[in-house]
Image (cartoon, rainbow, N blue to C red; front, side, top):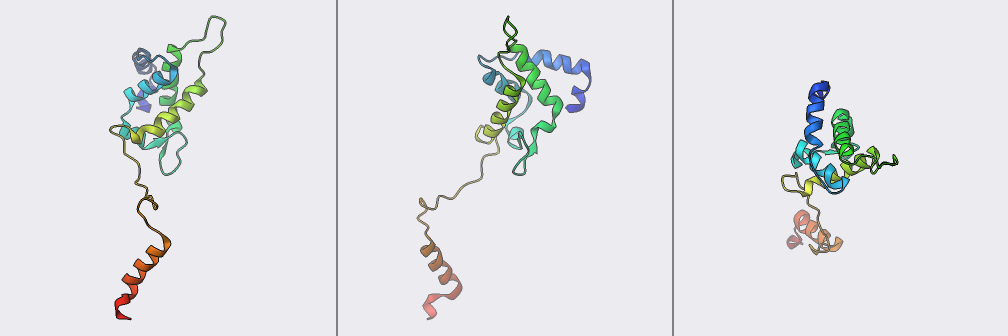
Length: 140
């Protein structure tokens, strides 16, 4: 996809289509544009900075710029030149969209966490279970 975006004519067509995607606020528009380009499953494999074993979304520079440009077209500066939204704000929100992708339908899900209090697991219980398995206390 990055190579397609390197061709200016393709980029312009894609940008024109993406800029037609709506959203009342820039956050909603950013989310809608990203969902048009990527599935939740794909977004679940990435995060903005590439931490915790995920792909770094910012490495896809052409895609990032395309999303920012599409959103900025929908939220142009006011008549006095003051920006309604900046590219940095859009980029930051892209990170939030990626962060929440595993929780959405089609996302990869999150690793299951063990709630030790809920499971009623204590250090004493764990030690006694280990002793039963390792030493079989019935042989004493």
